[in-house]
Length: 106
Image (tube, rainbow, N blue to C red; front, side, top):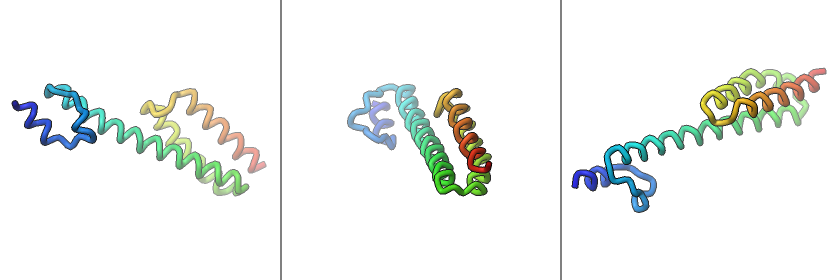
């Protein structure tokens, strides 16, 4: 009975398909929703930053690209640390972006 009351108070995204019926399972659902939202925001932030960096490179603006490089690397590193992307993927992104900025500056 208490579980039904608790489930009624939860702000679940899809309460009609939620199969959690214990306090711990309901807590896991809440944690998963928060974690999913955080991961989605982080991945979006990463994609937007890389996209802005690539636009600066495509427009042949060496100063803007060089100025954006540290911020982009920071977001890439944080994404790798948090598991949004893998470590080697982060290294590849950084390497490719750095090579393109270096070629643009030369």
